[in-house]
Amino acid sequence: MILVRVVVGVLAVAGVVAVLSSAVRTVVVPRAVPARLARIAFLSARNLLLLRLAGRSDYKTRDRVFALQSPLTLFIQLVTWGALTYVSFAALFWSLTATRINGTSVAHALDLSGSSMLTLGFDAPKGLVRQLAAFAAAAVGLTLLALVIAYLPTLYGAFSRREGLVTKLSVRAGSPPSGPALLSRTWQLERFDHLEEVWDPWEDWFIDVGETHTTFPQLGFFRSPHSRNHWVLAAESVLDGASLFLTACDAPRDSRSELCLKAGIHCLISLADFLGIPHHPPEPDAEIALPREKFDAAFRELRALGVPMRQDPEKAWSDFRVTRARYEPLVAVIGRMTDAPRSEWSSWSETAPRHSPPLWRMTTPRVSQRH
Image 1 (tube, helix red, strand yellow):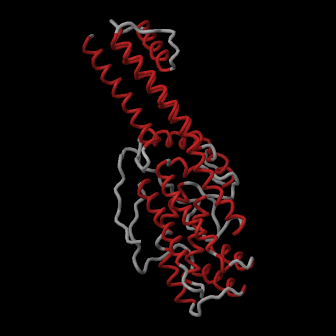
Image 2: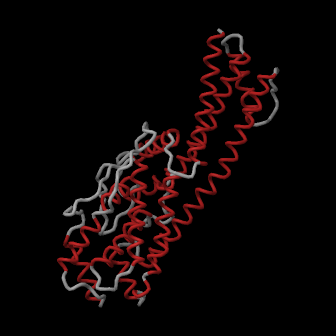
Image 3: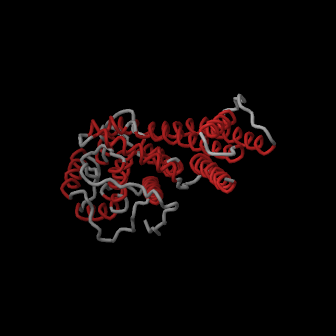
């Protein structure tokens, strides 16, 4: 019996440490550190919602169902932290107080754990070691509560920052937005000489998303308030707009558009590394999913509006293809994984398999990039 109590006590302490480690990795550490409990919560929520879909594949249904994914993931994650902590301290109190295994000893241990964690004090333990365990339970309970109180506002604050610029883009480039629409509408509004109004804030946006969506990966699955808006679609549209401007428009070199493009590619690489998406630098002659016909149609439309375009469409297409190959594969996987809506220029398919982040790998190998 003594050996059983020792083993249970050691496992209980290990359980508390595991919960605290998961909470610290998820909430406190300001970098992309994978946490297994968070991923288990994510996969559990997603599997529940996939069961609810029951084979229905239209976008409106998926958008309505998957809007619950991130809130449900958060709820499961918080409940898991609390339940595991409660059970772990109950096991610890049982190992310190029980003389035999029966319903009475287990119920008493559960009472001690709940009373200590919630600082209710209706069942006070006797003895120094048991009191120290009660103080530890209270400290852990209050710590988890404080982390949750700080966690949710931080999460929704990052979501609000992300969605502000996504909504602004839909006003400027339509819904769903696209790279050609961004340039054509900017030209029609006579703001083409002021495209830094787009590139500067979106450079900051990409940097912010790259940091927040790896520190808090649930954010990637928070859907926009408007069903036709989505952060992946918006990111693709801005990257396409910057690529078109740099490769197809006959305009002076604009370092701000280049910086915006580089920030976007760096953001996608960071997300891919964290999510375990395999990727590698594109080959010089890499093909892209976007058909040449769509590029040519956009080229002719922009030229017809009066936008200054390069004289050689073939060279423009070649340069654009090389540029888009740097981000298109990553956008395609992330767009499908998050069930983003599509535009005519989107690179993901609604029938392609979804990527699932690796569950049992604590770290994701980084691939050297020459983007």
